Length: 95
Image (cartoon, rainbow, N blue to C red; front, side, top):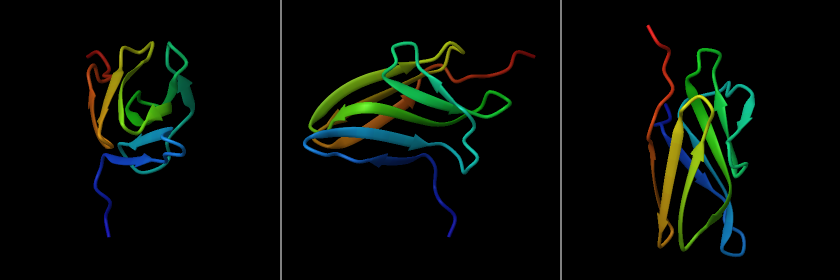
């Protein structure tokens, strides 16, 4: 069975925990810390975003952004345990 992407994995312990969003299958590449050191992104050799990890996300309600030097910004919002996300400035190579 082929997976559908993005795939969100949220492991909450005691009301908070790490949240992962996978945008493609492995390999995920090397981890790159975001500018605020609240999570990490995994980018392919071509700069394509493969996955992100938010370190501490509250299960009930939360709003966070991972901002990377490349200009890529990933935002999550959690309301009553439901996660939504968007890539605000996806990485791309200039032509």
